[in-house]
Length: 120
Image (tube, rainbow, N blue to C red; front, side, top):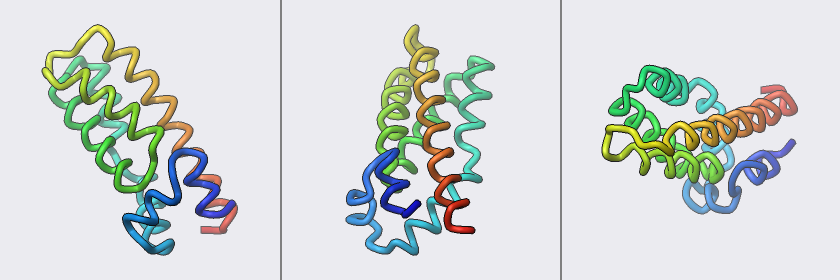
C-alpha cells in the first residue's frame, strides 16, 4: 500500500501534501499517530462523563487529523468537539462518540496496513 492509497482511504493525500510537502515527513507523523494517546483519553473521559477532558481530547484529535489530512476522523472529531463545547455534554455526544470510534479504528487500520505493507 502506498502512502497515497493509505491517506485516500481515510482522508486526502493531496491535502496533507499541500500542507507538509514531503512524503517522508507525512509518513513520519502518520506512523507517530499510532502512539497518540488522544483517543484513549477521549474514550476514558466519555466513559467517566468528564466532558471537560472529553472536549480537550476531541479537540486534539480534530487538530491532529486536520494537520495529517485524516479527513474522516477530523470531521467526526469536529462534530463531537462542537457537541462538547459547552463542556457539559449533550444528548448527541454519545452518538457522535460512536462515529469517532468507528472513524478512529478505520484510520488506525489504514495506517497499520500501510506500515505492515512497507515493512516499517
